Length: 581
Image (cartoon, rainbow, N blue to C red; front, side, top):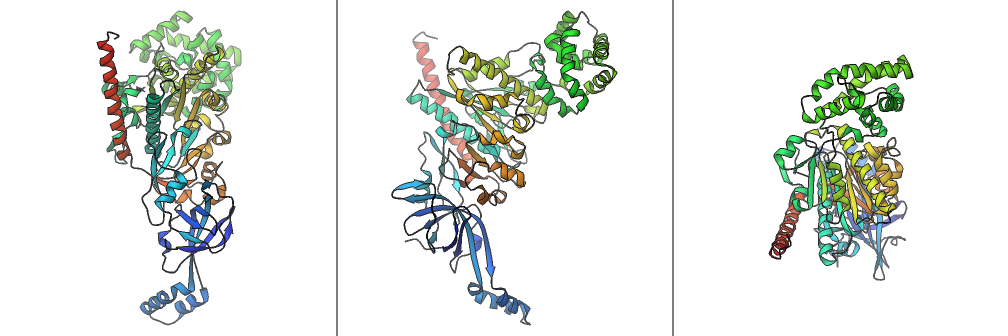
């Protein structure tokens, strides 16, 4: 029989329970976030420690401290009576209950003076189930007072059914977890397809700002830890990057932007990042109309915002730039961009007045950073990306930003263009009476840029979040500041992975949807690096775990990837022998 660690003395389901630790126990062994078991008179309960503290009899301790006793003797005296003048207590949030052979959410409390016990590995399996290497995969070790070794699995089947979120401050382990989850989704899809070749396939679209999904994960010193998931499963991913040097050196596909595809909303979203004035933004729709129709630029209207003699000289240095200049010259009958600039200013002054002309003249120079991004006069990559995502024969896609990792406007343009095209293609299939052949999971880093309070209603990702779930498109929302996300977005997330957050608003936002959220507000700021609170559909009960070491899991992924590669080569050899290919 297990030794009792303490006794329940007060509390409730909604406010939490208070337990007094037995004599001989050390409060330092009971960290916030640790699992604990309670044996009531009828049922067993699972709880999470949400606070820990000490109470003392002030009059006795004060009299010893205030006496003339030498310090060394005072310490001896306090130690001798400490168990009689102090109480060590922990606060517990009930999360699960076991009774009559059934595990369920706690709907009552253990009786007064029930035993508090160390959670056993068997109980963790009973409450959280056990890895089956099909849909249940180990995600990490739960936090417990004595540090027992038992794994908690994540239900990948449930995870991919609905959108989910990963939140936490920089450096807490979000990318490590993201790679693990993406790897498990690849395995789940791969193994399920072997059993049922007709099943709907899963496709991942990963926006990889720091190139840690598409290339390698690194530590804080820049040392490589392990390969990213798209590199490990290279046969199941196609990797794109706007960094043309990276594409050439590392074998990724190049991704250039056709500015003709940008909408007024796209420009309005990125322009404030370049520091343009509110006045310019207020005129922007008028500027678009004038550039499109009055100047004759049509879809090349975005170029009209930035072209002048200096920009022309820059464009002339590349074949892509020369194609763009030729097309603009054909449309406007003007080959000198300095003359075109003057014509644009004249049209704006005539239509909108001197104030609008001055705003255009002074603010558009801030948008010329667009000239430093990889642009194209054609369009190939985005269609290829979307084709892969919606086709059963397609591959997963990762967009690694490479040297542009801090270029938020470029990241936003790429993401919005892909999202808009994806949505259009899905709606086309739907209108034609066709069902989407794949389930698409989009990993979206810095999600507040697209799903924030000011952007949610105008971003194509907002439309995807609102419209596409029933059509099979889910979001993995990744962010350091969940409080900057629109509240409706967070309410759509059915599983959340919350690393440490210290801002009160961020903590409250991250806990939207968790039962008895008040009890967990103390837990999140206390989480250590790579410790995460998980709650929602993909885990049976809220739990704090230490995420399994990615280097270890990546070796498992590599074993499956090698096996998958061997199977693929065998199929190719067979088809060649049959003369099919």
